[in-house]
Length: 154
Image (cartoon, rainbow, N blue to C red; front, side):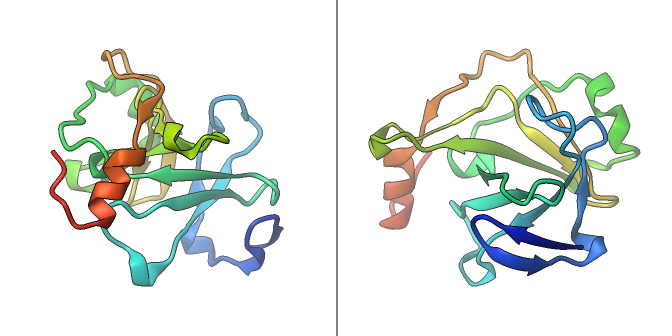
């Protein structure tokens, strides 16, 4: 699949790297095909990735593994919400949360209330709203800075 993206220019993504969200994502039900873009050399804890739409090349969301900013993140997930992902052993589940970067960068946050869950075996994804008491705006600026400086973050 090819796309002329706003952030990354022209990209050519193998079909095997396309994540399918059958229902789209919250607020964008027509966007169903995405890929993850990130610097493979810097892959590791705290790595910000981009969930790039292949349906709308101008649409990309910054995302991060929630465990990189909150080690105790264990949302209770309604099994019905994951049915569209097919059979998925725990080790095949990959979770991401969106990052919001406002003008005041120190207010950067992630949405722990509506994670993306991806079945890495078949690359089907879904965005769910969890019932747990996790915040929509969980501040991460200080957490990422500490990780960058090599400090342990709990």
